[in-house]
Each structure stands twice: as C-alpha cells, then as structure tokens.
Length: 311
Ligand code: NAD
Ligand code: UDP
Image 1 (cartoon, rainbow, N blue to C red):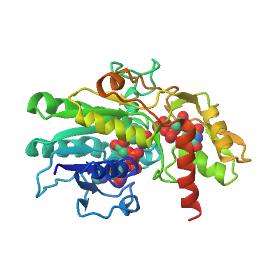
Image 2: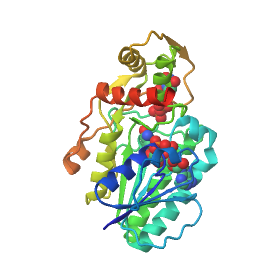
Image 3: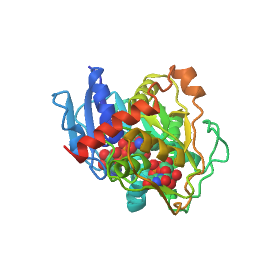
C-alpha cells in the first residue's frame, strides 16, 4: 500500500485530496497546524489508513514511516487570511516548503507543490499560460502570498535540479466548493452567505475584474493526475470559463433565488484585473479538463452553506 502525506490536509482543498487518496487505496498522513483549517473537515474520515498530525510545517518534522508521495498544500490561501497572517504566509511558503522538500528527499518521495495563479500577479496577458512570468508587486499587501509561492516554486525546481527530487508544481486557479470557510472572505462564500441572508452582495470596485471558477472535484482530480504524471514543470489547473465579478454576483442571486441587491465597495490594493487559465498543457499532458458546470458546482456549494448556516 502506497503512503501519501498531505500538508494543509485539514483545509478546504487538502481535506478533499485526503478523501480522494483514501478512495484510491492510499494510506494518508495529514499534517496541519489548523491555522486556517479545521478538524471538522476531516471528522468524517473513519479508517485506520488515515493519521492526523497537528504540526506547523515551518518546524522540523520527523516521520517514523516511509512515504511515497508528499503533497505540500499548507498555506493560508484566502486574501483575508494572508493579509492577517503575513509572516506565517511567508514562512510556510519558504521554510515550510523547504522542510517538506527535505522530507521528500530523505524518503525518496515524489513531491507536489500547490502553487497558485497569484504567481502571475495582475497579469498583462489573458489567458495566462505557464510560460508567462507574471506581474507581481513584491512589496504590496498581496506580495506576502505571491512571493512566498514564487519562492516555493523556485526552491522546488532547485531541489529537482540539484537534488534530483521528483517534483510537480500545480498552479491552482480560483477553486470553490463545500468546506470553504463561511468567513474566509473569498468571493464565493461571501456572495453565497450574503444571498442566503438577504443582504447586499458586496462587489469590490466596479465588478469588471474577472475570475474563472473551478469546482473542487475537478481541481482535485487535476492535482492527482499531475502527481501521477511524469511532468516536472508547472501546470495550470483551473476552469477557463471567465466571468466578471459583477456577472458572478448576478449568477449567485439567480441560483439562490435571493431578493438581495448589489452594493459596491472599494477595490482591494493590487486586486488582479483579470484571471483565466490557459489549460492547453493540462489537456495534452494529463487528459484533464473541468467537467462540472458553474451552475452545478454552485448548487452543490450553496447546499453545503445552507446546511452550515441551518444545521
Ligand atoms: P485552506 O486555508 O482551507 O487550507 C490551507 C491549510 O493549510 C489549512 O488547513 C491550514 O491550517 C494549513 N496550514 C497553513 N499554514 C500551515 C503550517 N505552517 N503548518 C501546517 N499547516 C498549515 O486553503 P485552501 O483553499 O484549501 O488552499 C490549499 C492550498 O492551495 C494552499 O497552498 C493555497 O495557496 C493553494 N491554492 C488554493 C486556491 C483556492 O482557490 N482554493 C487557489 C490557489 C492556490
Ligand atoms: N470580491 C468581491 N466581493 C467580495 C469578495 C471578493 O467583489 O465580497 C472580489 C475580489 O475583489 C476579487 C474577486 O472577487 O476581484 C475574487 O476574490 P477572492 O478573494 O475570492 O480571491 P482572489 O481571486 O482575489 O484571490
């Protein structure tokens, strides 16, 4: 039986990844310090093939058992979280990724870094392909996340080149679904919570900025396929269907059947104007593309948030 370790495994994406790995027959070690995640996300897992270790990956970790695969997902991920936790975000991207690469090297394990579309910053090209180097403000408020992930990619490639660690880098674009935190400040939970509560949906700026939303099941499938592939350079995994944020607010109002209206608030500093993945590589190398429509994914997510709000 193969063993996989998932850091950030009690978070939104990490917990879905643990589920998929267990379903595929892996033994799973989940490592998380619960800074933005929750044990609630893994409470449903009842098997002795699953171990939870509460640990901060910026500190050294010694494992008794050998592992075959290491998925490095630990990091605050929502803009609100990383603006509140700037030093922790920089440390987990840098020291945390370094420590985890050390474990992968020691164990001869294959290593996957969860990177992000934020490495493209406020992109000057649309859609973004993996060849684009990005347009990041290193000293702006979002720089703590963007630069931590850019460093994480650089050290991952260095371990690959100099220590011959077998590495993968996934650039994850906006992903949504059940187990997102209701108050994590990201647009999907904010809008759904506001629509269900009959409050105004708060569109930042004039809402002309774009995002492309991928349902969690598709995202996790893409991440798994990348880990099992033999490709060591970064691969975008996201849904290329692009919407303005204003359109997105209207879609949420329609699907929830809410009587909420839209109000406008200030645009956060350095908020990217556009974001849409070019997924040519994922299609060619992994035979992957998203399958879940925005309508279907949002219905499943809205159901989850309804249950959280009124259990
Ligand atoms: P999340 O906040 O739900 O999960 C992150 C997890 O990492 C949490 O459980 C948190 O407690 C844990 N963590 C943070 N610092 C840690 C540390 N020092 N030691 C141990 N655990 C630590 O966020 P998510 O959306 O599930 O994101 C998971 C990963 O995917 C992150 O690396 C994020 O940057 C990346 N990502 C996510 C998205 C998205 O749309 N969800 C987009 C791009 C990239
Ligand atoms: N946004 C918004 N209203 C909200 C929350 C977010 O208009 O209540 C906007 C935000 O300014 C950004 C987009 O929605 O343009 C996506 O924001 P999110 O925080 O989900 O993630 P980002 O893609 O910026 O990392």
